[in-house]
Image (cartoon, rainbow, N blue to C red; front, side):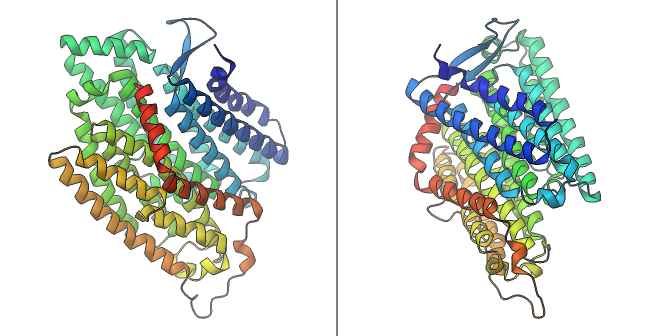
Length: 499
């Protein structure tokens, strides 16, 4: 086995082991160390993506070199490499963009613990991407849940305590359903390694045995991960969780945590159950309907908001609906569109939350639209970044959001039934609603400030790190639009390896 094939293991172990060391470091040293670790994980993920592209197929890596059922496995492929690269890069840029506000929002003696949670969350994301064991996936789901809740609670305000409590209640409900699904699946198959599970499930499906229990398993796992990823109508915890915590936490939660759960669901559909079994149970149709409704209702709720961060939070609900709509199509093209949208939305949403924080700083720390008038001039970097993100969400050409909607439309045309019409109509309505609230916000940012208002321009300037993060996010968004063809081709190749 080549040395580069150990990279996935290193990407999990490095942040996991570093979290323990970070807990005993002082604030500024912990900060430097976490940036070093995230940079190394991002570089390793880029290297792994390069090597696995040339390798041309996925492989399994036995942890400790013990076979099942005693050992554990991770599995690497092109889709895993691309996903790990995007996740680690977004984590790095999100923390870079929001690091200055941590001094205002997080108690100084708690900074080290905040960075510990960042590293644990990174390890959990990497593990969910690479693990080939169902129970290991559940363990890291719980680590990610606790870490995410800690990031919400880091600001220690009354509203964030309520948000963290609601988040924990809803997510523990989802975790419980997911665990029940894993337990029942283990009872049916006698395995925990995903490849062995898939063989057993395929045999059960072929013989027609345990059809009802298998359907219940698929439903439990799908509902559990849907709750955790905020699919409508399980989204009620989202506005407070995203809207009242620190900018770095909002960017990470909205762009990575929910996407990690969705990626795990896609992995289970491909690697554990099998798409043919999923389609036979009809669960994909349920996800499809809820995805369509979420696309519309999330945008309708966003239009009604007067707070920019709550507006972005409800927009996330709509965009999660897009992803589940693609999954619910039950086709390779639909899944490809969903995976691409995971990347484009993750990049865009992190940028929007960071930019919104900069605009609020330039407006007397107010998030209300009436106070944000003129903030695009007071904080130009944040204004441009928010505009790029808003145009991408609307579907402006040459940006990642346009390619996402194009992929969904193309996938819909292959369905050839009533689903085609439903997807196209939902895309048209959702795009129109996106235009209403995002362009309204952009216009507000560049309207003259209210008479008598006086906001210090310096408050909108968060320094070099914030500006670098916004520029980098905008550049990645443009790259997703202009260089979409090789990225789409890589995702397609990765999905072929994924199965």
